[in-house]
Image (cartoon, rainbow, N blue to C red):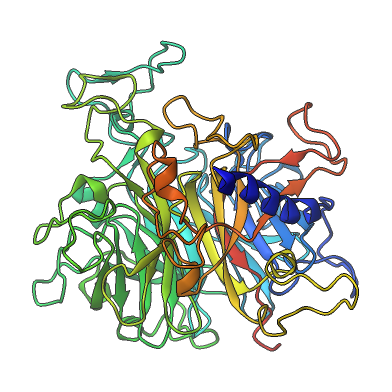
Length: 574
């Protein structure tokens, strides 16, 4: 149990430096005034309780990873003050109280602007890097609410990123979500109640599952990656599920709810939220006259627009990286399952989110694994009850997956620590200032670091909504206090930073106490002493800004509900 005390002390180093102010800035700020700076973190905060202690419409938060201090805050652009401008076209709602709920965020392009998605209103908003909104995208053919309203309807847009030709890749997921009121209704004889209150749940079959999200083959096949013109923000092309039997991986059920994207010289990598797999697509094979690249995209004829599901836009899949197992055939590994050739395991549900790649080509991503299938009816308050007892946070085995270059299966994990839960966003960049100070502190007399190369490394930053690394929330040497079924599960979000070399991955000789023990079971403290531990924790501290919770004041931590975590990129010309 000593490890938990040491971990809590270590995290305090990062926390003590995580202070700053939330400031909104104009779109014509002068040189040298505050803007989102290159290599800093920009994190989408959905502001959902109980993970956020200041519930709201959503926001983007910057963190200076050099100093560990808070940067600017990008606030909801869908407000009455923007009605009548390009920020509030007819298909979005800007009345008082309208939600934003940002998910994906990317930056760079011709001007270094940020492009931030709204899961609530199926729109993409272009921003100056000082946080000022510029304009909102026109209606896309995937929109479930082309006339506004219908907040949170599915399909939803999730992660995004720039293509090498300057276009934007934007994932679109069609699935059932507990907070999407156009999800599939309960089946005959089904219902659910909130166990805490006894009140009936809305007519949404997602409540038959734990966690309350799931997909179907039909909805899965409706997922896609839209290609967006950087300047007009119109949808100009797409990569849809391959259906033609002559195409590789045609009708593969693992194509289900595209979530995260990245591009390298091999192809476009697309993570599948309900597929537990990453599809690698030949993005060049999908280029048409409308999507050649910035400055070369041919406009559609007047009155015409992108038509979905054309055969020519079906994705040409190069390979599929399947995260279901580590390729060893080891059935004793708690993270492994085997369901080939039909890929129909219930464990594929509610899985992959964001993905990132290190300089050597290793793939990392958020994976929300469970120890149980948690099939229909095995959810708190669901009726009729499923074949087993209701699932709860004790089933979580969430982690960052690792795939070595060129491999098609999982080769390692990070943060299987049972105190790290509800993971979503992930990014890779150079080590932070607080992280460097922790692993390689300066000599108090000479001011020189003992290892001049230790901090010249890439590290991984992950956004978690229930952050309790080390599982000892109060530092008393015992797990918790947390959820009754899982003392390690403590709502309240943050961003952790990890070393990513093999020795520091879960079970490695430099991870935790070096014992190699890391199974993710919250009821087995001795089995997790060898899990990777963060080298820094980044929290957003209130410095007097008004927030929705009057109990939060100056010096208090504003807990977050992270979605995508991005490192800010400069404009192409820089």
